[in-house]
Length: 292
Image 1 (cartoon, rainbow, N blue to C red):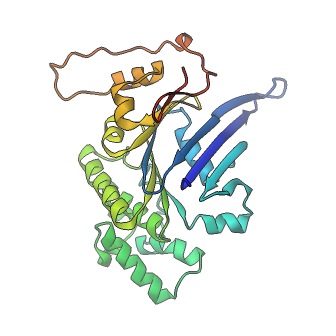
Image 2 (image 1 turned 30 degrees about the vertical axis):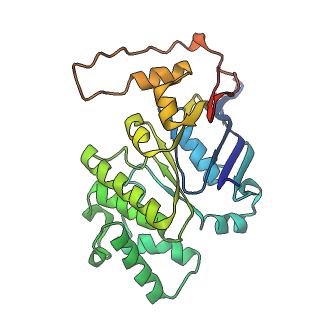
Image 3 (image 1 turned 120 degrees about the horizontal axis):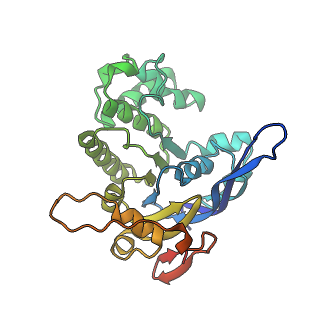
């Protein structure tokens, strides 16, 4: 059984356009399905506005989906009551994109990391403080900085605090929503290395949402490519990068910067009229699917 099984997930937003005009519907997530195995680093990629972050938030019900199923260890979390969902969030956590806005500037960082333990009423005050100090050490921060405020830390350190908060409840699944895209390149590498190390040490499973394809290529075992709310290609990372099939995937991969300026490049311009946006995924080979 897969750890996470997303089936036909849909999220439509209705936009009001004034008193006399009918509302318009934005199909942010439009019939998305994929599975993530235990211990996997699964990549979800696409340009801004493709629906990948909305997909991640719908899985955790931070945004309520319009329809579909999200099976976590076989149970549909979309059918959970509020109390059941609260319990489920002990096992599924998210690391947000912006380390500046995702931490409450009025709270000390020790209290921020302790907050999930307080909400779920886990341990005594002393036990929680010990756990917070352990988490700080785990993510490479000094435990004696617990009484500082977020503004006293760098962007990379703040993201480590966000990771520590996500790990407080010993989750099985971490949704990393553009978790390193707001950081400098050198700091990105450090945070990604930390996430990979934690994956092995704590037996974590990741849904890694990103638009940095070079990063995804190096750390993810499988990847799904999203375009305008739909998955247009999905498969083993090496196979997909070596033989992209969907026109959008080809255009996306052609835009990856190369280190050698002498390497010949051919940027592919996407022609939306060259493919059917409603085409279903079909299997092209072992573990490789594309909407062609």
